[in-house]
Length: 271
Image 1 (cartoon, rainbow, N blue to C red):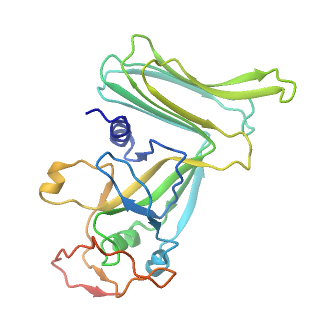
Image 2 (image 1 turned 180 degrees about the vertical axis):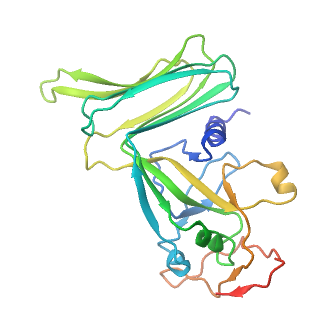
Image 3 (image 1 turned 45 degrees about the horizontal axis):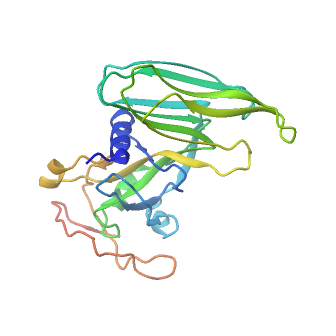
């Protein structure tokens, strides 16, 4: 049975090695952790910074950069012709435009466009790996290690079309006497696709997270053969941290119902 979310997430990960959210308005933060479902959906169940795990392992974050615009186009069958141009005003939403067009003859195409995305990431991947493979962290959980957040985005999943597919952000004149002036609007000419967008022009408006990275343990054996996950799998460390009585800020133990008991060649290190 066709699952549009699974298709969109898989296509975008194959192109970018990042996880593109089917529901970008669903809040996600760097440090969030949870289970990845079989349909590729991800819902945070907690955050390593809130639980005190980040402090225990010395994990911190940094704002890397803010780009003018970022777009990702992923085709199921790599025979599409992609074109596009972007002209963005220096002011936050001052009459800039983004135009993307492409031809898809077969299969599906996924596209994500973000306006002025801000990139936040965990600074030390080695310390994050130590946490993920420690006894404090359940085996099947994954962590958001970096994220792009913005106030304006458009995402599209569409089947092949007879005409060129377009996704545009254009400046439009609003003649309403109460809100006259130039405003921006997302649009597409696709029929039969799934198109979602947000455009928050207020500088104080909340940001959304359409794109982030999930990291987790390596799958092994038959589990790895059965499933391709949109997850960056970290190589096991030589030494494994054994955390005694992991507790959150409320002094309650983290759920260890899925904590694994895999054996490692190296001796464990007491943390």
